[in-house]
Image 1 (cartoon, rainbow, N blue to C red):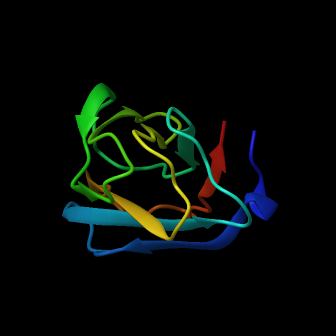
Image 2: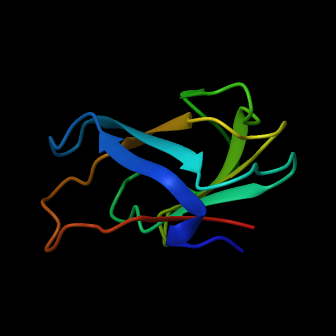
Length: 116
């Protein structure tokens, strides 16, 4: 399983902070050294508070070609799990559109990214 030192670069960007609106979450990653093989699972956790329902076969909004276009989303934990369809060795991204909460959240979310 991967941790923070797995990534040479890691950014997480959201397109909107407006309540009750679509928000495209984009995660850009690059392995620290070497490559991640086909079949590796990339987990983005902690994207809590969205209105987007759990879906084990959710379609990513956009992604680098090394990702399968379908992923798994769990609303309660705000977890997205995407699988690599080919080797990841350069900076790559995946995006998912979620619906922001109806009301402001009490605290900011602090997502994490890992691999297994």
